[in-house]
Length: 634
Image 1: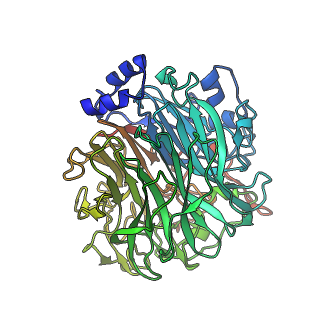
Image 2: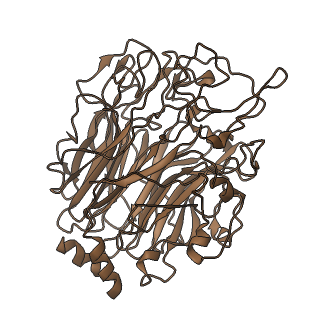
Image 3: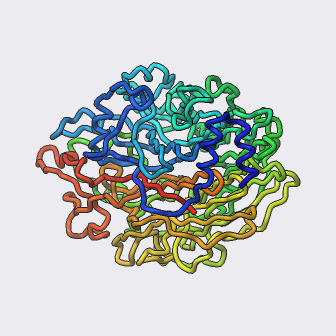
């Protein structure tokens, strides 16, 4: 790849150039899966302050994260564009939830849900786990540099510039005063190389510089104020006039059911941010899931999913374009429409066993959230989360079908934006025979990963095509990366689900039991998406995504996305994984448990006639061991 290498070398100096040349010759070959979240005895979490300075620091949250065997989901990962040895990963990290409980409890869920900071300096073969500074228990010297106001954070997103800096974005909700109100801020953390842009490239993205709030929500209970969610981030690495600019987008909810996509930019490496600008103009209806792409000429594109009309199952992918480095955007353009894929069932709450103390802080109960209509559930499990058809299933994103976008910033010839999304495949709809459905009421279908290439120079796009048209299995949560003329795409795939049927949720059998059902598959293209290689299975072990680990161990939650990152031929993918979950019957359930205990997780409870069931008193034993894994992607 001589052109790719020579262009990148222009932003580096001497020794750095030599290291880059070696790094770019490494091809991606799937190998053994690597665990990013080392929250188990013998693993351990290390403070980012210690990683960067060598000075010892710890606190109760980090100590808990070193033994927790807790939950992590919604992974993000990004490879350093000037040194593929270095990767930074993140996730919604629940490892500190039981901080302060002591070696034998009682286990009180009072700690933070925060952004993980996972670091590899050997191309993802092994990882060191940590947390982004600023969590409530953080008293390290870095804590004062985190200018955020939150007790919990999530939706991590990551982007590198070309100068050794990595930017980690987040939405945040929990009130530090522990009230029920949700603050709804979005913020971005910056890490750099302690030696500056010319420092040892192995130290890129290691030193914490700051976290700054990009936009503030308004305080209100239960997300009823201005609440920001569904984040996206990208940095300009083109070497052009706006090289180093950072763009951050999100969905803004205002409590009355409508929402819009906003974007802010930083021209000083995350120190300050522009006034948020509304990307979605009048006439655009409900929107969600923004993603950002920067083309080789420095133009900025924001892709998002639009709900076309109330009651319709046909939605669209839209794009808004800026040709002045994100200062202003033109009106959004519809790229293509699709039939949504969104598992739904009718709520049928069962009796909730009395419990003296909760297993989760309120902010942890993402899985228990309901759909747009009070009578519908987008995820189903036990007790209050029980649904009429009797299946147990995780929500497929908050809104079903999502879109991910990228561009090759080294491509100075074209203005291509590459898009992937996961709708229902036309012609696969069948009657479900139950209250469960995924495409329209009463109808299920097969989700597939589609690809289209948008040409920003003339507004045209290629005909949407399936990346891998298999006869069985659902394909969800795609992501795509582009660099140096090579595209890499990944997705979750249930083709190995022994109980697959388009009439049922992923991993659900006809008798309502659940089975391991999800793998990650990947493919690549070297001709701008005109053709794609045969897909490759990345995961060494198939996972059961339907373990009931949330909402007091009554409903599953898998997060809302996976992630792939690449530099030329080198690519790395991350996903949520349940291979280490310890399964056991729930003592609160009787013999009539519909899933036959196949979705229940190990937990320890005692019963009192006065106070009911205790909270789970063995959360470190593996029942909630949900992890982030990664592997090289072809």
